[in-house]
Image (tube, rainbow, N blue to C red):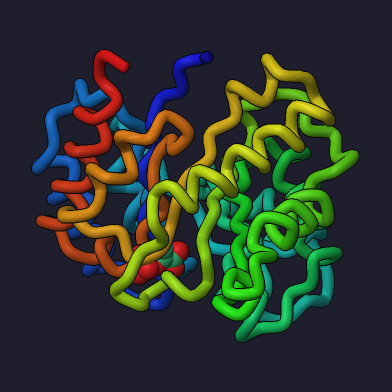
Length: 259
Ligand code: PEP
């Protein structure tokens, strides 16, 4: 199996002013050794991106956005585009987060256009998918996630396995204080990887990073990272506090060392 560098991504959602985000970024950098075997990305709200970029410039920690439009420019009040994010030094962009899908009505078709645009600008999408509780209870979680994967990615010009990251985030675990069972997450991820292999070949699929997201904490990170299929985590709540974010980053790096 290809060894994949773990990734820990923090989605700050609609939290932190530019000043707060900049201070947090500086403290995060100061709180971690710079030789950890893990990639880290913070995704602040749009207005805080310049402050975060200033603090993390030339460091090993990346930053990214939480959303973007698929067009480069146009009459789209309230939207931002891939070249705008690129100009702020973003390397990643979260796309298809369930809060965008559920609260703001984003469709698979729109998300697919966003993924395609991000790829064409060299921004790495963190492509989110995941089922509602009723879908899991009906025994249809895997089939549902496979269809979201296909709707979002099948047939796209995705030439480099490292150009995109997938985040499996069961909706019922997000912000809920309860996680999926690692084995259930692995079962979904195996199906996703098989599907990617059917499109791009086994070698390609083995290089794609698949994250878990949903109420991960310093207490639960170990149980996810010990699974070979799980290449890291997308965090909401736990990325807002320096202690929990740092503890999870350290644990993710240590868990994959020597595997
Ligand atoms: C998320 O919103 O992507 C997320 C994983 O949130 P939380 O960690 O708070 O469940």
